[in-house]
Image (cartoon, rainbow, N blue to C red; front, top):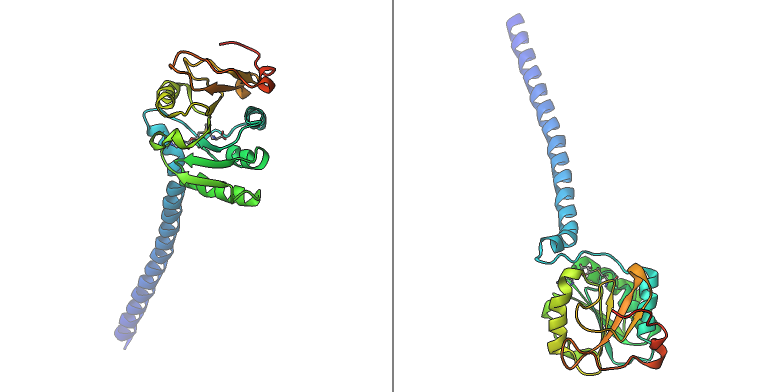
Length: 226
Ligand SMILES: C[S@@+](CC[C@H](N)C(=O)[O-])C[C@H]1O[C@@H](n2cnc3c(N)ncnc32)[C@H](O)[C@@H]1O
């Protein structure tokens, strides 16, 4: 009788330890699942911000300062036609150009999260109808359709951009380069100082010559010759 009780007792103990073990591994599995899922979700969100660093030329997301945006808007005074911001980030230049220069404006951006954010920002600013944002490599965009081209790039890409512009820019189109100037084109005007500087260019007949004069309004902003 005692032997039977002992065996029953042992079985009960075994059962309870199995239950305990399976309970623990359930919590553990849930934790692994949650942390693993969070890690995957974070990687998916972060990847578009990190991958520019893996490209031949790294062009990271650094938004324009408010002063830089104001300088771009000064450069756009009196302009018409379509504008493109090459690498449009969170869309601030596109939205400002649509709101304040009343231009049809397009943002081209590799990072899909920034593209979605920009669409939302444009909708919030009431310019969803006059703006659009595409997830695309700026080097694959044909610039012939645009009369106003804005770029906040990095120094290493400006020479390649200059040759793309030489091939695709139409005669009266305006290029506004933020923070880094084009290496060999002469600017028609320079607006602002230091990190907020923007340079205005028209297409020269040859890449090293500048023929077009800046509009009268902008001449007063031109404070240095390169
Ligand atoms: C310096 S930020 C400028 C953002 C915005 N134009 C502004 O002034 O606030 C450059 C942007 O270009 C994007 N970018 C980098 N390489 C690109 C490429 N090949 N094509 C399109 N966008 C690119 C980056 O994701 C980043 O948002």
